[in-house]
Length: 182
Image 1 (cartoon, rainbow, N blue to C red):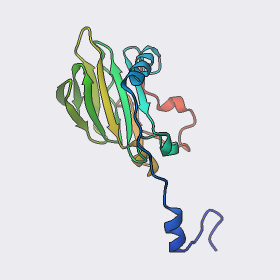
Image 2: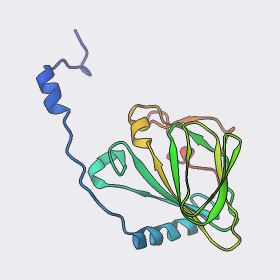
Image 3: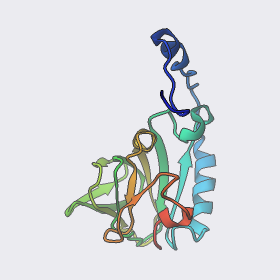
Image 4: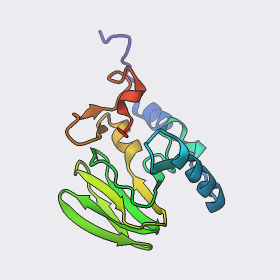
């Protein structure tokens, strides 16, 4: 007999129970994002010169995405900031909202400026540098973290060489262990 963690249901029940509510459209106002982003830059979470906020549609529940399968992060790099090389099992599409700089992705230097879009495919080492002496760089980042997390295949390594961390509740006893090094 099957154990207590299993069940057998009719296909009709499966179809009815697997339907999910629709995610409603929503908006994040630029002034609100900027205020939160500026606050994140002054926190010590990511180290001096780097900050980030996540945009969350509350309809996605514990997925913390803008949709059930996609998340969005807005990150800021202070003038001259160059972050540690890191990698993760999710992809990252970067939209340069402000500033100029470069990223090194899998050893390839990609120079960017306001209006540019570039991608870091999953599990490639990447780092970002703001080359301005006086202006912040702001990158909107679109990722598939809810998808890879939901499949149990989300891994982070920051900085590169520190060892991959499998981001699932059972493996993370101290949530600070998955935070980026400053």
